[in-house]
Image 1 (cartoon, rainbow, N blue to C red):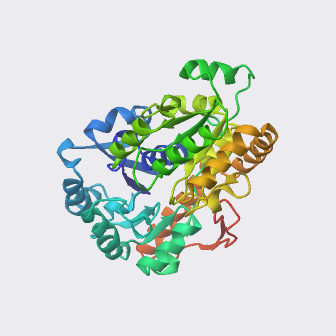
Image 2 (tube, rainbow, N blue to C red):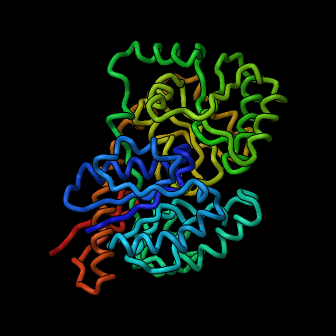
Length: 405
């Protein structure tokens, strides 16, 4: 089977979708050596795929198709032609922003979230219209849709009215070789020295996006936390500037605690585990998530988590995090104070988090995704698909596939 994957929405490797694409590719290539994989990659992103060059058939895409409008046009016109020329059996588009209208082969899409229906002003009006109206029509053209959480699946049914038999819930995984506690207890202090942060700190790993990521309320709550305690804890943001970042930087400048707030910018994958090791706690007050990888990554690294339960977050973190109300700055401040002042609480959450994070694994995610590729291709070709039964227990980390031949 020849499987194509569009990668042009990875934003130079600095988004959650990029992490999804790279992790899924690594896991697919590790478990499967019978199928052929073709990746369509913008020329400026080719260096990011150097580790895949021996295992993937990489098709360079001219850089002038990076602009969102041009990229949408490329997906609707040129990509279908390339899929036919290369005789793809399945084409996977891992983002709702680029779903195809034509049917050059079996189409599999991943929808990570439907945030435009939940967060007012998340995007500019044109992108909000595209996400709410155009994508709804395109979703009906996909043969199979991967939802990365039960919450996202429910949103797809609610807002897009897509047939339930086309949607499969396959949770994101976790690379446990990268995200794990350090073997050496001294590594915690070494990590702090590496980042030049010597006081304990709350870590928020997220692109600097306003309003969806809720940085402004977190800054207000951190000010209140600092005023009502004598704590030396700091607040550290790790993420690239995104839409609304100017408002976040201005809030930091106006903060009474600005000397204790740091912005590290985008943190490379290789360095992210050491940042979790250095942190006293991970804080994640997002207003809406289709999954939310950073809290799970933090848990796997032994970093206790205080987190919103909006969107899929409650589903993903279970009982392994301290829950905050992202709309209530007083509650956020209380939870920061509890986390900073109670080492017993931190240790209890650390132990719960380590156990909970083991439920997520990219090998399982890849196996379920590959099964869906095969089934979708067979159905598109008019051949009987193997009977596949999907577990409907939302407490499971995947809707695991149990095949009957």
